[in-house]
Image 1: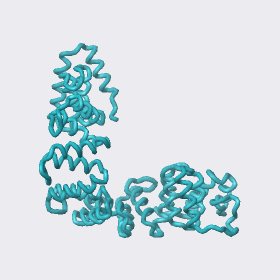
Image 2: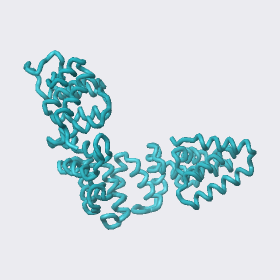
Image 3: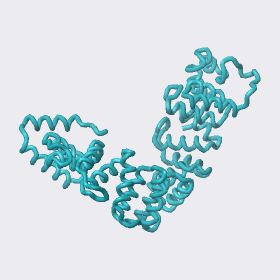
Image 4: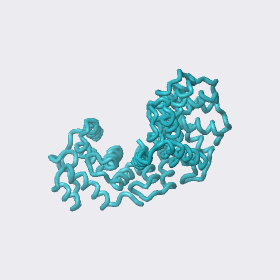
Amino acid sequence: MAFPDNAFRASLIAACCSAFVGSAAAQSVAAGSQPNLINPRFSRNEPKNVDQQDQFLAGTRAYILKEYSNAAVIWGGLAVTGHAESQYQVGSLFYKGQGVDQDYAAAAGWYHQAADQGYAPAQYALARMYRSGQGVERDFAVAADWYRMAADQGHAAAQYNLGMMYSNGQGVAQDYAAAIGWLRRAAGQEHAAAQYGLGLRYANGEGVPQDSTTAVSWYRKAADQGLAAAQYRLGRAYAKGQGVPLDLRAALAWYRKAADKDYVSAQYELGTMYLKGEGVQKSESEAARWINKAADHGLAAAQYDLAVMYANGHGVPQNYVLAHKWFNLAASASVRPDMRAIAEKAREEVARQMSSIQVGEAQRLASEWKPN
């Protein structure tokens, strides 16, 4: 898909104009002229006393103040003159629907103009759109090409995504060595997801020799930056003594950091540690609180454990209706047939302790449940 032809470019300019400069300006664009979008008082032939960078910074200030319409007018005026940074920013406004109607095709058009000038953030943004099929026909190979252009300029997120495409064989031939190389370049720029990705690959021996100690070192770098997935993996490493000495207190601490960020598996593991008294004083009520959070997100194991707690009155008041509800949900969410059968059997055992009215209420609660 070629971007942008003159008609497409004019339609994008008109979209900015019609929203912020008035219908007369929009009509002038449609007629072939290009009004000044920086200030309606100016015509294009009048001299301006501020340079492009000052104008661009004025647009940035407007954006920071959430004056998106003003930002669109200022950046739009610069974009039509070929200012790459402004073209990228106008694309982002269209992508997010800030100050203009959301329009992914328009966003892709502006990103393409800036990307063609070698502007790395626009190349990265355009790659994402080709990868997802937003505003353009989905094309992994084209996405990989744009990621590579940005990655070659040192764009860390592009390096990470290109590495992941090599790892998955998406748009390029699968090549673990190339994946590791790009992930390593991004990780060297403190890109947390790339650091985490390297940790996973060392843990699994994918493209590198399996090395739990090195895996942990990469997890820790990402965890220290606050990446919840890495914090969870580091917690697991301490819980199992993989790559680090077994340390349940450290495991608990890292699980808590990830759980506080709503990372579901960490919430479940934290609840389990409270339930068993591992690395912390046993507390069934605290266990129920964390397991409930994971169950509310749809984790089948947490739903099953919560059901058991309601059935037995451990950490929560005994409640067969809620036990039946959670067993029912656990059975539906279980991927493994054996676990589904266990949950279904437990549900039927609880049902024997309930009246038909209670069973109906439990079924209603299960049918109305939606994950958080």
